[in-house]
Amino acid sequence: MKKYLLFMMSFAVLFFILQIGSGMLLTLLNTPEITSTGAGMYSEVDFGNASPIYLVGAVLAATIAFFLSQTFTFKKNASI
Image (cartoon, rainbow, N blue to C red; front, side, top):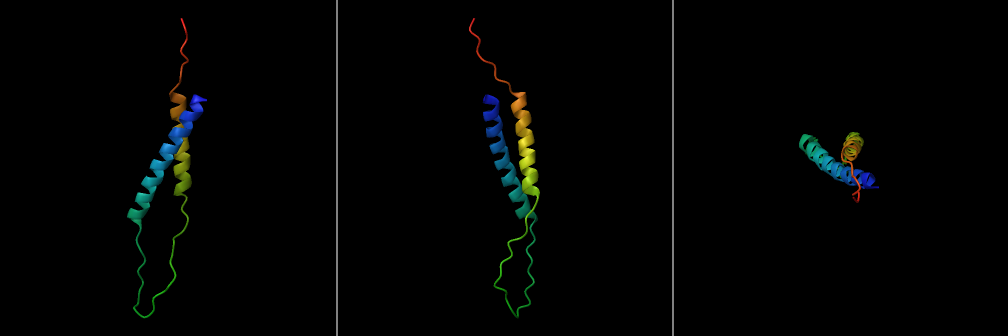
């Protein structure tokens, strides 16, 4: 049970960190498309497209969390 809790907590933290990092990276690399001719302005907004970077971040966070939960083992206190 402790390994499961360690896995879930580390997965949540790593996923959060990777999502913030990927959001910052995507914002940094975004080049807005300004094709205004001055004649007519469009009232539509382009929200972009879906990117597989979220799935990659989730798989990477789950993999790191799994190895972290396997590395740290909890030993029960044995009474002498």
